[in-house]
Length: 80
Image: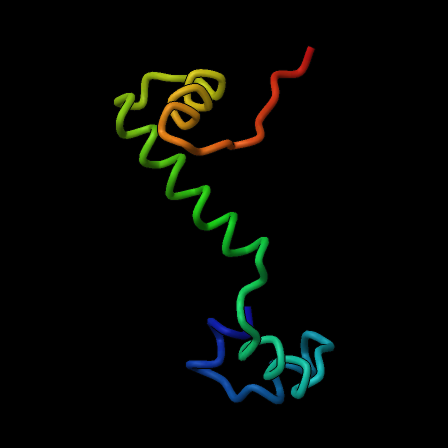
């Protein structure tokens, strides 16, 4: 939220209003993405590609099969 509003408002008052330290905000804003965030972004692209290949006609099980055929293990398991 601060990242969006910082273009119109000064950061210190935004941080005070949201009960966030200014130094904490700057530390967060300059931090590199975590391994998990990078993997999630990659997986999202893989899912979009699989959905495009199947013309958006597949559910999660078939999307997983398509992704596995293309070397991507999505980790989704069907609940029994």
